[in-house]
Image (tube, rainbow, N blue to C red; front, side, top):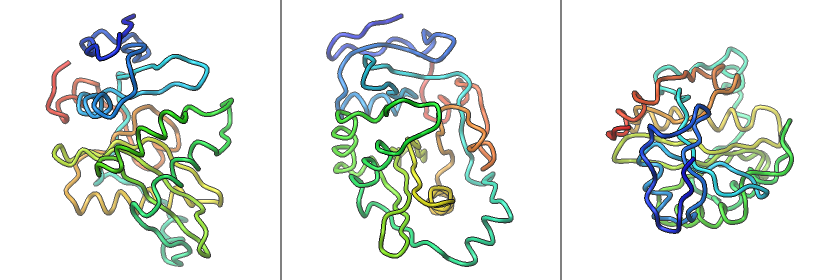
Length: 215
């Protein structure tokens, strides 16, 4: 296991353990986050843990053309129950993602330090948010990092205060990204929910090829 010092470079991705953990420590900063996402690495830890950096193998991704929209969601889109905006209130979205209670989790992995860093990324137009509104209230949303030059969007977290709000926002985002020529959405790790939307696991090596980097 590699322990990073402040400003120390990441070890080769091939040195990640069987769970995808690549390194511990270092600093959470805008330059390091930009480098990390461009090289298939992301931070994931909670307030009780040190800073953990991951690059799992396999990698969960969604190719926009493989988006799967269920019959019930198609019917929901026909009713247009929500209003969706982009980058209207990034801070509210990331704070809502941090606050939402999730099954099997104690506390949140979106720490105050993360909120600060990703908000700064948003100011650089790198981190993006999707807001889902109903009756003028924010009821769902998601955020991630947009690597425009690589045509890749890295999804980070989503939340919903009413049924289907986050899924509605995600599907709307995927459709938008497809029109912008995005070739891949990084979903990081497997979940049944993501699989139901058409996401799949690919070898880390293939994912890195999409990023234009080597292991």
